[in-house]
Amino acid sequence: MITPAPIRFTANVAAMREFFELLGFKSHIISEVGPDWVSMRGDVGIMSLHAADYEKSDVVFDTDEDMENLQKRLHDAGFSDARIVDEAFGRRLDVSDPQGENVMIFERMKDTYGYRVVE
Image (cartoon, rainbow, N blue to C red; front, side, top):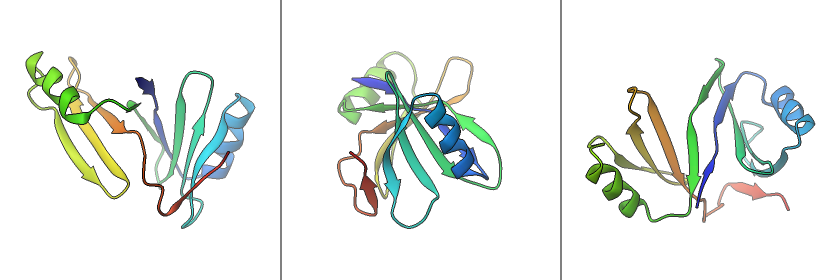
């Protein structure tokens, strides 16, 4: 299953967290290192907040699909730049959409070391 999961880079994670709580999102995964990352779940998607000294939103999805299968499907459809990137918290697949914009698809987090899951 693939789920919309945009990332909002912001200089004020606390204010953005309060805003998305007003919209009905609930904190799901929080960084244990500091208030620089929170993943929030809504009814049909995920909103992640990431501390930064700029304001920007990225098109992102979360999936439990096998990343190699997804990459192959994209390659077979002509998206030859689809590549898997290994991050400290898991893997992501980067691919350019038909307009040339980057889309990130994150593997569903299985190892929460350094993060706290909020029930």
